[in-house]
Image (cartoon, rainbow, N blue to C red):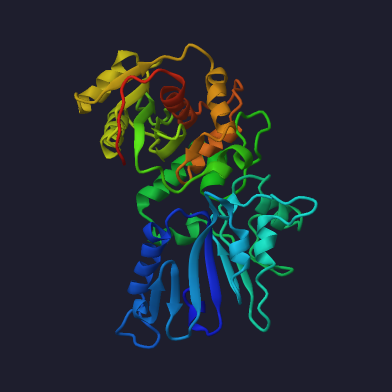
Amino acid sequence: MRDLSYEAGHKIISTRYTMTSAKKSIIPEFSGKLELSPSPYDPKSSMLADFELIDSTYTNIKSGSEITFTGLKTSSGIQTASLKSIEGLTTWLMEEAEELIDDGTETEACTFDKIDDSIRKLGADLKTILLWNPSNEESFIYQRFFKERGVDITHNGIVGDVLYIYTTYEDNSDNLNPSFILKAEQVKERNPARYDHIYMGLPIKENANALWKRQTMIAPFRVHSAPAELKRIVVAVDPSVTSTGHQDECGIIIGAEGFDGHFYVMRDDSGLMSPLEWARASVGAFHDFNACLIVAEVNQGFDLVAMNIKTVDPNVTVKDVKATRGKMLRAEPVSALYEEGKVHHVGHFPELELEMTSYTGGKNEKSPNRLDGLVWLLHELALSRPTSTFIGGV
């Protein structure tokens, strides 16, 4: 996209499904990349000197080509009309294309087709580029470009008018921290299905019996940032109480209640940790977000859970909770909040969302610790009487 702008005659749009403030997210990142790259016209100068930025549009002063960053969805709905009105559009780059859905009807084209069909400048090399982190086999991208065309998800090459590029972390292993690779190998050994999805990018088959559906209950309500002012912020912990190396992950989910009556899942700090490690992680999240409370399940660790957290910081507020009903019964009212569109994921949480859309409560299923943490979080924020109130921002 950057290099393409050095060719004259291009109008490029780079979109995400939602982008509440390009100046706070993608603009600084793109400017940083320009600053680190030498100009093809003057190697002693950075590419940043070759661009002029007005609002969210970069103009390449050498070629006159433009790059505009925007979101598809705003508070007033999908902005296909404004994007279609851009005269001379030559290239559309869609980040987070997993958020696209088949929202067409018998008489109206879907969002993707509306924008794709508007890229039609005569005599130009037209491009639509989709950056896709595979979600599930019901997703629009998988159905349109893989299943309908009979293309394997790992295919590299050209099929019809589409160039497929499949890549994983293994292609970039020389530039990755060894701890990341070690974690991937641990997940591969402990949970092959999660490894295939999270690290190898293979779409999952959404379980029809799961309480959550990604395409209708999670993706449409995803946001890139929480409100500046929040009513309460809580850290929820589903502890692991052994350190044998084969214990379950500790679920640590951070979220908030907004003054708008909606709820925001803001971070997933879950992982395979010793008791001391998850206590430190929980307390760290408590301070990072200026939370009012840590909610911790005590079914396995009893009062040792609170004691473990208090050992790290005796001043944090801890609320013990016990599971008196099965996981699915406990999760049903939380799932209902998602159906009502009242819960928003701030960004993407692939491992959490995998548990949400695949767990059914079967006897042989692995305990969904991230999901358990989420359920405890939203029970505290939305379904029980608050123990304290916090007003402020993150």
